[in-house]
Image 1 (cartoon, rainbow, N blue to C red):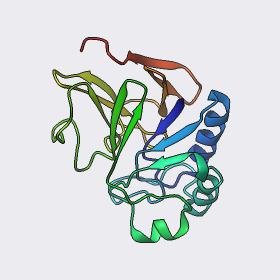
Image 2: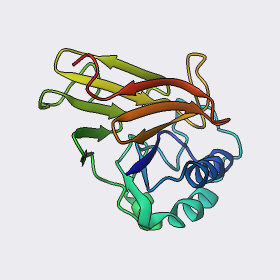
Image 3: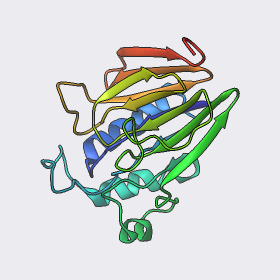
Image 4: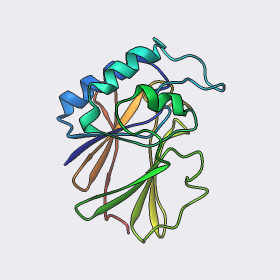
Length: 184
């Protein structure tokens, strides 16, 4: 199954439209959203084309394909307008031999690791910086942010196809790749 993974849209209609385009062009079957979908948050500048109502409509159009976890900017009112579950703190996803613990990152992250079975991938957003680090017992991954990248990173997302994870920018250029099971 081909997953498109994105985090930290923060209400950007422009980058949500980009995400929908990329989802179609990549042939995505599932869209994993790692939180902070509608609100920009008090620590962030407004993203390009800040239009949460447009983001609601765009994401609701893909509701059958979406798996989402709650970010630190999500609230009960967001669930009232989104037609897919968005308030879970985390999700376990098993696809083939790969197990992913997906969360936003404001609670569980590379510095506060939940109990994980050996080889599990800890996947979160929140920092807005793409990253892949192989630790002794788990692999840490972050897709970065589509709308508000930080630390000089690009507007990006992650493609998970089988055992291969590929970080890409919005132009489709590959940033880095990880093959699940390597160096474990």
